[in-house]
Image (cartoon, rainbow, N blue to C red; front, side):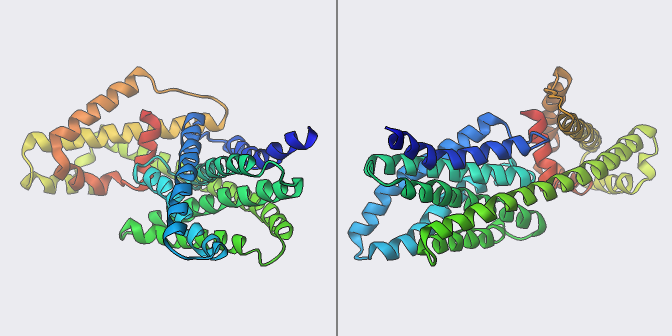
Length: 336
């Protein structure tokens, strides 16, 4: 009876506990629990979908099981898990390395949880040592590989101006190599598991430390820049500034009312950016500040202005908005 209880605990608790620890370490509360649960569920769905696909592949191709588990399964599984993170990055739901690590680890946790529950049914008499390897080794590997992909993918998406596919390929390749290397068991399964336990938690902690320091720097610099822009707009001296002169050049390309809407859009976006940074600073100090009615009204006005100036107008004013990945992400944080 004791072994029957110990097997699921050892198989499931390590990866779930580490995910909970990552959420606890997120001092800015960038990731909501409901979003993590949704991503975790998506990982479980992916795991459930891979089994019939794997059986179909093995039934069609005469490939040894060892070769399949070392080369084919790592590539297909990491690609499917990575697609969840790519969707979140492309939708501007991930802004910093902290949330990339959390969401990536959550996808892997969902995958590993579903996989280990399946193996509990498939191998009810497996030894406790087997479940130590699966719980502390395989499960943490699944979470860690996708977390590493998320961190690398986001970092390269922010730095590269080219196609986003090229930015995410290095992280995907590394996740596949790590997964494949673990499945090779170059050392004994228990030593490989010890390696995962020794390396992964400190690595994720280092990512959190560096990302939160980067977030603090970005908040400070961004707050100062937004404040200066808003003061400039409200001072009446905006027309003499570089941004004002750039906006003046747009008069030849847009009608007068549209140019006025462009200035209103710039002011509104700057105000919302300041509010978003203020909310993050409050969260860091333990205060949860939901968006108020004034913020909702501002988003309604912003959507109206976006329709008024059109896509061409948004692209034209983009140099003054600084619409980086983080800028778009912070508006999502404020508006959700």
